[in-house]
Image 1: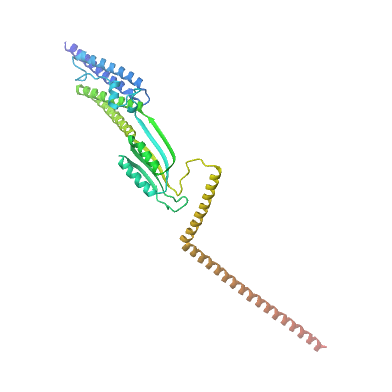
Image 2 (image 1 turned 90 degrees about the horizontal axis):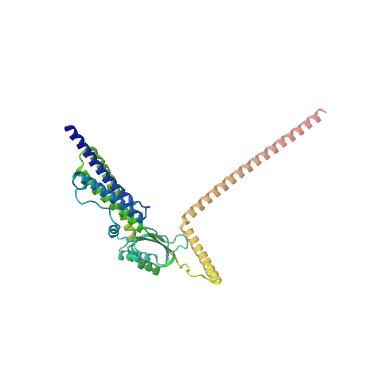
Amino acid sequence: MKKNTGKSTGKKFGRKFMAAAAAVLAAALLAGCGSGEVSYDKSEMLTQQAGAAADTAAQMYEGEYGMEANGADSVQAPSEEAVSEETGSGLGSGAASDRKLIRTVNMEVETREYDTFLDSLQQEVRSRGGYIENMDSYNGSSYSGGSGSRHANLTIRIPKDSLDGFLDMVSGAGNVVRRYENVEDVTLSYVDLASHRDALRTEQERLLALLERAESLEDIITLENRLSDVRYQLESMESKLRTIDNQVDYSTLSLNVTEVREFTPVVEQNVWERIAEGFSDSMEDIGDAAVEIMVWFLVNSPYLILFLLFFAAIIIIIKLGWRSSMKKAARQREAQEKAAKEKEAREKEAKEKAAKEKEAEK
């Protein structure tokens, strides 16, 4: 009898563990419906299949031991209505305002009053509840006609409902040279992520319920390992949802501001207007170049003076050396000429002496 009782107990425990494994497997199948590449209809189908598998596992557990699988109410997969209600992302044709839209704008603006423009821009950002995420400014000379002009690159985050008014303010305060706008619809991805998150929460609750009833150490370790993976995935899903919410609630404006003397024309010009403007720009460039050259000479005059002094010293040294070498050569030539004359005089004297001796002998 004891042996039969032990076998019966072993079979019951095996069935219990199989029912628990089936419940965990059903919840895992439910979690798989949130892949970012799966469409909303396919996610709903997988959700229904996972819910049916979970209910079957719960009935097996309840029929074997006369109790519910999770110790409380049976867990059902999140329905489409529940997901839409929680995320605010219904896919109905009339729910355009509930869609998740990420709006991004790039603008290049010219201004004649650089400081005033930036001050008013920052005040407008604060008044509309936005913030400047990044700012890179170059405070060059406002009097330079070339690359030294002041400019700034800003990344601004503005609440989506205030973006249009803010763009109108920027356009009115400066001259818009370029504008690019992009709207990305992430509703389907958001719904899939939300469905995946809800499925992971369901699986987490089921695992916690099974963990309370686990008897063997092996079952506890298996359930805790799976629970750790589920919690990690759940935190990742929630982080992605928060990121999308931030991108949707706060539109991004990449703004390039440049200080100029004259605005770039925004209307097409005829030939004579282009010639007149080109000639005027050329004369202005010549004047700017003359000013820049004068400024450069004045700024670098100490270096130029030192260079001239150094160059003059080198020339003086070269001249002194040349004069010295010339004098030395002249002295050498004089000495050589004197020696040659003395030699010639001695030879002449020797010849005369020899001639006198010959006459004396005769």
